[in-house]
Amino acid sequence: MTSSSLIKCVLLSIGAILLVTSSVDAQLSTTFYASKCPNVTAKVADVIKGWIKSDRQMGPALLRLYFHDCFVRGCDASVLLDGSQSEKQAAGNLNSLRGFNIIDDVKAKVEAMCPGVVSCADILALSAKEAMAAFGGITWTVTLGRRDGIVSSVTEGNSDLPPPFANFTQLVSMFAKKGLTMKDMVILSGAHTVGLTRCATMQSRLYSFSSLTPTDPTIEPSFATTLKKQCKQGDQNTIIKMDQSKTTDTWDFNFYSNVIKGKVVFQSDQALRTDSAAFQIVQAQNKAGGPFNSEFQAAMLKLGNIGVLTGNQGQIRKKCNKIN
Ligand code: HEM
Ligand SMILES: *[C@@H]1O[C@H](CO)[C@@H](O)[C@H](O)[C@H]1NC(C)=O
Ligand SMILES: *[C@@H]1O[C@H](CO)[C@@H](O)[C@H](O)[C@H]1NC(C)=O
Image (cartoon, rainbow, N blue to C red; front, side, top):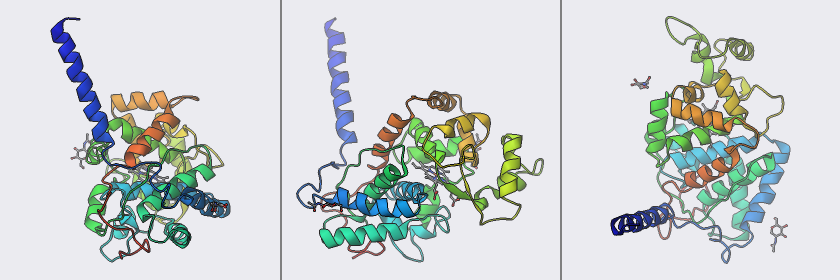
């Protein structure tokens, strides 16, 4: 090695170390409550298991609740705050997000055990993970130490939550705004391999797509027929599975095969086919034993770091639906 290439190499290594340090800047840790509330994880797991036993579909619902919290103002439990101008009123949340009652129940039981110690933001992070663990098929590491915000804004909710009709460019820029890459976006979208949707979200795609064609031509024709059978024109309320390729909702990599086949419910899902780099990632995920789960776990860790409040910032709410 010449001395100039040695210097380059050292500088590159320092750069890499700085990058790693800045990505853990959030100062969250897996042991944050080890002395303050050592049994919190077991408690959350216990309460969540009970809820999932009575309605397994609340697993995906809690995963989405967590995603929507993190995407607006960071993972600060702002999505849980009541109010006529709060995030709950945003287009992507209203009549759509589910699981608030479960979070309230978990919070009450954790407060009874460790009063004033565990934030709603952390309870949401733990609940999403435990709910999907109980649902089956995926788990990830949850770092802790978030504090609760005191602001929740419908305007921010409307601008920051991706809509189901978003195109690829819009999706990439909305995720970039949160410090997430195009790949993170493609991997996290894989969550649509589970869960439910209301017919309302696909009315325009099925019946009034454009003046030239009432049905989005990128929907595989037999799949369009399947969807139209379940979601009649004008039906806003019926609830159907997003992954129609299976009878029981399970965590798998079907989302990616569905993208390839044109059998996904949203334009935003199908948009992953419209960019060649994204489509390469889609194809890489579409195989048994592929990288999907480990990449999803890494992306969930990044999602959980978005805009977190730590140290003396924010507060530890007593009740998750209102500030102290
Ligand atoms: C890429 C942009 C995304 C868009 C445009 C989008 C949009 C949507 C929409 C419209 C629904 C159905 C809501 C309803 O019918 O009421 C939905 C459901 C869902 N989404 Fe996403 N989503 C995106 C990304 C994500 C991410 C990153 C995650 C999690 C990591 C996620 C997890 C879920 C889950 C689990 C459901 C089912 C919820 C349930 O069963 O209650 N989504 N999404
Ligand atoms: C921790 O919580 C679990 C689940 O609620 C419970 O079974 C266990 O007894 C608790 N352990 C301690 C030391 O409190
Ligand atoms: C994506 O949507 C935006 C906003 O509607 C639009 O301005 C843009 O031209 C679209 N991009 C593509 C590639 O269709």
